[in-house]
Amino acid sequence: MSAPCPCHSGQPYANCCQPIHKGKKRPSPTQLMRARYAAYALGKVRFIQKTERANPPLLPKELIERRQSLKQFCQGTQFLGLQILDEAMLGSKQATVTFRATLLQGGQDASFTEKSLFEKRNGRWYYILAIVSMSGKENVR
Image 1: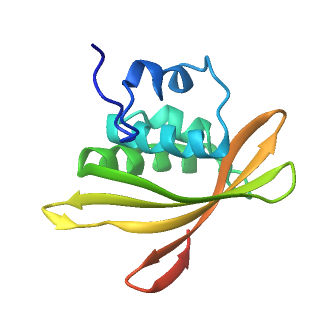
Image 2: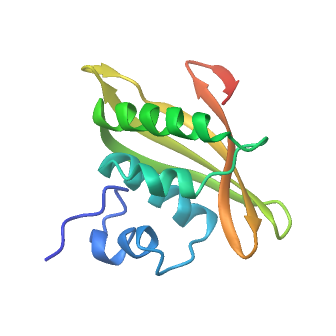
């Protein structure tokens, strides 16, 4: 039997996020959110970068810095749970997914709730930006 998916769906990784990570399945916004969470848990930094679009686009030096920052975050974090709270379509090319991520960093609770904006470009969904709510505060990152 396959290992459980790190996105905490209860499904085996081979049937859940792995086909998305391998580019064999085009996910919905919620499936992409789960696949991105699983990619963070597995340290799949290239997948994380491939499925996000910065506005304005990052310069090559910024992409390298982002990759290093993502690696450090993945290595220093325990990914303990993901709960999808809401998905809303905003027309045919935009959607939001609200979720709760349960994380530990350095033994400290680093959990957060996020409302992510996704945009469909050339038939594929991409992560665009997030409004993060921690302890009642909201920040765009």
